[in-house]
Image (cartoon, rainbow over all chains, first blue to last red; front, side, top):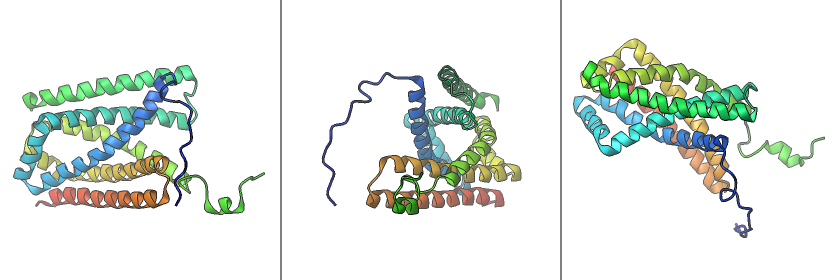
Length: 132
Length: 126
């Protein structure tokens, strides 16, 4: 099959003015993909719980490492951002919130929610060992 | 007036070839997952630092096991649909797109089965 010749394309990312709506759309897809990757880990974790205390301890140990912690933090934030933006999408699906001003405001709300929810979840989780 | 050629009409619309079902199920699984995830994340947070016995006992309880399986099914279905759209948007060569989609679908299926198996195993007592 003959490959298509390289044709010039107009500049886009280099020149288009960044909007919150653009950024959130891209983040929605990126967090979604990253979360799909997280499913792999979720399955590993579940299988470890099913396998016994040793396997569980190993997975738990990984979560305690720097890499594990960063990943978990990433997945937490991704989850809240993707879910918040997902709900924003559901409102669009029924036709609500398309006005640019409203879309920007809801966008900021989603971002704020993701940051706050991640903070709350981790604060509770880290303090959890002290409470339980 | 339909401007498409007869063959385009016969082949279906766009890169996915079919969209309505996909759109609807994606929304349905999303809606189901909002309460399920609130429950799941809250539970995981409360289980932080709890250790094996408590985690195992939590998953073994019938209510938690059932909700967990429901969440897992919705999760894997939603993930598959989402990744499908990503592949369709960026991979156009048929020889690359089709096998990738098939492999992804099988991987999701396999992982979903493994996850449900794990939960059932915990619930029945390994």
